Every structure is written in C-alpha cells, then in structure tokens.
Length: 351
Ligand code: TXA
Ligand code: MG
Image 1 (cartoon, rainbow, N blue to C red):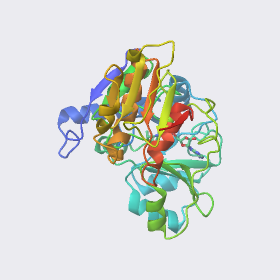
Image 2 (image 1 turned 45 degrees about the vertical axis):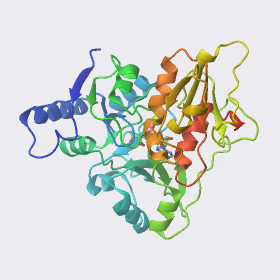
Image 3 (image 1 turned 90 degrees about the vertical axis):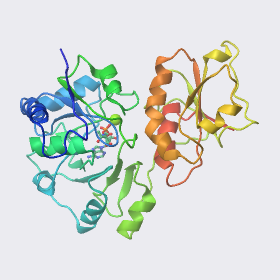
C-alpha cells in the first residue's frame, strides 16, 4: 500500500484555514469515513487513528500494529457530546477532573454505553478509556471529522511509542492508509490513564499528569498504579515493553565519577551505549556511544520528551548493550521511570 503523507503543522490549523489545509482535512475525514486508518500527532505521542464505531477500521489498527486483541484502545474526542454518546455515566468528580485537565494528556476509564462503539475498540470490555487531546492538529482533525477516533500509539507493538512522524514512517509506512506529519510530540510519554469505574479512582498507567496533581484537584485520595512486575527485587526480562532490541540496564541512583559502566568481556567499549543527561557525559568513557537525554538531572520533562527517540536511536545503532540513567524517584518522575524500567525489563544496577 502506498501510504499517503499529509504535512499539517499547528500553525496550519489556526483559523482561517487555507484551502490547502481544508482539502487535507477533507481527505482525512473521507479516509476515516471509509474505514481507513490514519496516524495523527498528539501532544503525548503519535496515535494510529480509526473510526471507533467501525469494526473494520479497528481491525486494521490491531493488524497494522500487531497488537494483541485483548488490549483495549483509547477513544479520542473533541467535545462532551461525543463523550455522552458512548459512556453511560460520568460522575461529577470525573467532570471536575476533565474540566481541569482536558484538553490534555489524561485518559479516563468510564462505564461504556452499549451499541455505539465497535466492541473490538474496547476489547469486549464494559468500560472505555477516553481522551480529549490538546494538540492543535489532533483537535482540528477531531473537530472537522466529528468522529470519535480510537488511537493507540502509532508504533509496532513492543517498540517505543513514536514521538516524531519519522518514527511512524519507520514502523508503519506501506502498512497504513495515511500519516499526518507534524511537529515532535511535546510531552513524549503516553497519557496518564485513570480508572474511574470505581471510587477511589486508580492510576492504571502513570503519565505526565501525576497522582499528586490529581489528588489536589479532586480533593480526594487516588490509588497508586500497581504493577507487581514493575520493580521486582531481582532483575528480570519478563515484562519487556517500549524496548530497543539490545539489553538495557538502568543505573539506579544515577551516574557519577564513581560509577563503573562495565564492559562485557565479549564486546568492545565502542559497542556500549549510554543514555543520560548531558551533565553526565564527563563521567562516561569517550569510546562509548553517548546519547544526551536532557540538559541535567533535574530536566526530567525534557528527558521524557526525548526518551523514545533515544531508545529508537540506540535500537538502530550498532551498540550491543545500553546503560540508562536512573532519575530520582518522585511523583513527577514516576511516568518517566516507569517507562525506563519497562524498557529495561527491570534490569537494575545500583550506581
Ligand atoms: O497518550 C496516549 O494515551 C496515546 C495517544 C495516541 O493518545 N495513546 C496510547 O494508547 O498510549 P495505547 O493503546 O498505546 O495505550 C492505551 C492503554 C493501554 O495500556 C490499555 O490497556 C489501556 O490504555 N486501556 C484502554 N482502555 C482501557 C479500559 N477500558 N480498561 C483498562 N485499560 C484500558
Ligand atoms: Mg502503546
């Protein structure tokens, strides 16, 4: 399949729209209406979108990503009317969170109203994850098409999520109908997923919006994300995700002049990769391949934005083992460290 590429920047969707932008939006709308799938930018990561009410489109999404069918998709919306069309009940407490954080990087799991969405969108569950993204291009596409768009991250299953259109092209060119090429995703990690089907609400996936922020707005307790595979006592490779092909090891406590980045016997220093803040470069052997993640140890937002590109860079390089810097654990670094642990399969060394 010849994948169609549309370039649309945030600048392009400012009103009044040019006729060129309008015709691109029209083509995208038609594609969705015909059950085709089109990747779009969002502020978190690029998503692989399709009409959430159309089982054919949903089938194409699962197929293109090689995603297991029991993993439900997030449905992206433009307004509250759409939300009400396929959820059965939205509590006032959830509304309060939506009013505060939407449009933005948080998805709410809510009870599903029967008969509107394709059952495969929600993997036959009786709940649905919903998000109203803030990226101007995503918003414009959702507004223009008026279709609730199911969109998982636009990567092949198991690979790091795409934060740049180039990543989507690498993974899915020739496999999907179209790709909207726009800016690098501002946040770089997937949305916080909050399970609101039971009170107290519970973090199903940590993201940019932290548990502290949620509790503050809600004025109530939110339950922490629980993933027993997250930080087991002994290293393991079981729960690998978002991962480059090489073994990756997180250096807990960070890297400094005392850190020994061990070179395995059977490889040379040149085949060792290190992903860390720029300030750490001075402690790393010049022969190793250093990828700078952010300015310094405190710039974790910049690190989040650049993490997946760094993993993809290493994946495509000739390094055979990767060390990655472990940031201080706080509520604000939780999502970043969650993805780093997953990418390493929880292989940890104390720095
Ligand atoms: O930032 C994001 O959320 C991006 C962009 C494109 O919006 N999307 C994204 O989708 O990360 P995906 O499919 O890669 O991740 C969706 C996550 C999965 O972990 C899935 O299991 C969970 O949300 N999820 C979706 N619906 C659910 C439901 N009804 N109940 C429990 N978990 C659900
Ligand atoms: Mg994903």
